[in-house]
Amino acid sequence: MCSFATMVEHKALRGRKQVAALCWRMKKGTREVLLITSRETRRWVIPKGWPMEDLKDFNAAKTEAFEEAGVKGRVSRTPLGRFSYDKIKRQGATRVAVTVYSLEIDDLLKSWPERLERRRQWFSCAEAADRVHETGLKAIILSLL
Image 1: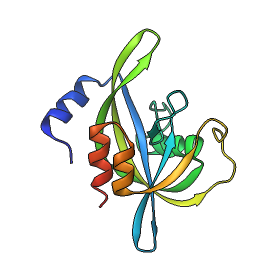
Image 2 (image 1 turned 90 degrees about the vertical axis):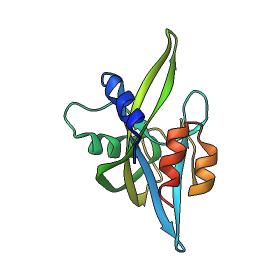
Image 3 (image 1 turned 180 degrees about the vertical axis):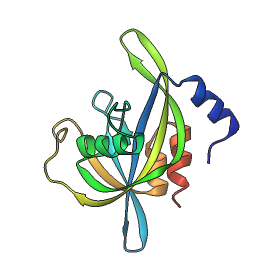
Image 4 (image 1 turned 30 degrees about the vertical axis):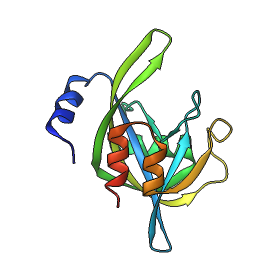
């Protein structure tokens, strides 16, 4: 779960928050995590985006997973955890707090909105944690073990 310092930072960044889906499946008794590439830097990330006015945060995370990774599944209403990162923009970096929800994948689509802009790939939890850059996200991924 989150440390006190992480919760304090998350509250301080209330106006700059995103929601994310940690997409996973069980294959041959092992949990695998689906990572996607970011559009600009091509780094391995999880689907995330800004909250949506008409949706609860967990459903917004599920929508981001469909749009960015082409997946459908069952989303948890309770967050797995939170992490923060520096979003780089032309005006400079902005610290963003991200709430992560678990999404157990039922369907991997062949066609989805951002399929031409991103790659997606399955990894073991340990390998996925090694591929992402954010320390807090690494910890959340490893918590699935």
